[in-house]
Image 1 (cartoon, helix red, strand yellow):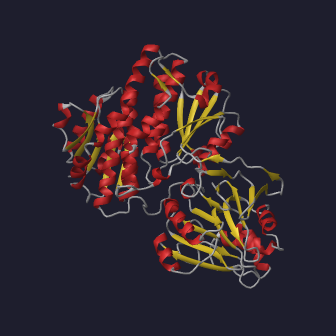
Image 2 (cartoon, helix red, strand yellow):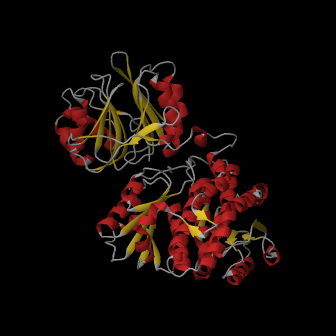
Image 3 (tube, one colour):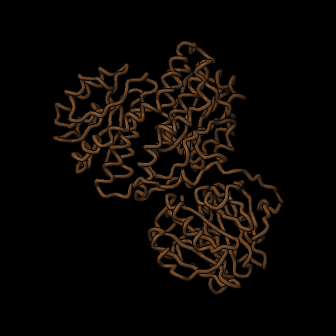
Length: 611
């Protein structure tokens, strides 16, 4: 959750911090704040509830300095209020003016708070972060780096933090464990942020802080060490993100931009991996483990939210193409269930950010139990990418919209390639693989065809936006698509929607259907098509209004539905790459017509880095 941006250099910190907060606001937007060291070290702090724009107006012409920290919050401990907003400072009477911004959760903050209270510390907020600021202040003896190291040796939980102190006006200390933090390296300046989107406008050189790492930064030097003060040398690399990729451009919302980026994103995902001439899938990130993957006894996918829906499609693909038993687990449940991991088990973690806390924790559990671990992530150098034994990057480009679209398609595309890669090493024939690869190569252009229906989808959606209860139904590989369609509608339009297997409707949920209720069927021509038509009739009999995602040219279904969104005819394993697109557009248009903030849905943040 939350977004951190910090700066030390020779330029005006305020403008850089505010710009960075705006780029990071998708990570949390309950409140925002900034602290800047002015002149010889006077600490200036401002916080406000709501969006970054409100904070920017509050700062006005003041807050002039070249060292500062800033934060945009997604509330965990303590409600949404100015006292709970970051930055937090240490005790006003006992402290040193230390200011801190933090992403993560300090799990043992209550006991530390009790200890500090006995030392007469007075707290102004309900947050765990303020406790950490007080602890650093209590341990401070003139060396901020040592105080931060000492404090972090006492805490348990997750943290990414940036700390400044008026007594050391030319120093910035940052640290990380479990929550992402990057250091951008410029000319006599450093920009520190939760992700590269806030750094790339200033420098392309950066390094990711490892867990339990502390960095002391001045304008012309940097020292990195462990919390135990063992010096280490970071690996600086070139950022792969371009500034143009994270700009909104001519689009009204990032979500819409990213929906329309999907043809190019999937083309980039496939590039260099689909060898049509030789009829092969080339996945360098897992080649070292090809034999172990092909001889796996069981494959377990783990993820949360949209990634879990991609994992469910992956389960179908692995069993259909690779003929290996597969299953899907909520990462949050896998970790705490004492899962059985037998020899020959492969655990595949799916996460756009590569920082999802539950998924990362489940991955660690799987590794400890001896599983071969594979990561399907989008962010290069992320925690899951570093922790897994092998992995495949999505390569779909930065995703800013909180409601995932192109990353979901990338996850499904990579899962399809992985299933084909393993399948060819087992029972999948060369002819079958060649046919599948040729169809996969068409997918980007076919997505473009689906996007051409946006206006028709908007018009159809307008008829139902006042209905507060929807059903999304599908069978086989399109059942997870129905789940994803329902999730998208819930996330950004706040319409209650349920996704389920079409056959499950008769086992209870059919009682919900009343006159005019929107029921969305993913009803393409496939092995269960006739069964879906039967389910549609059951809905129509009870007065439900049927919206179908159907195969182009299907005249039978058109007469059974109020509205139909068309997708080109492709092989059944590839249908989810097309059928989800109309549902993304429908959710987007519904949210806009209902006046909702599409890119910043209430109570949500892009990357869930705390449990």
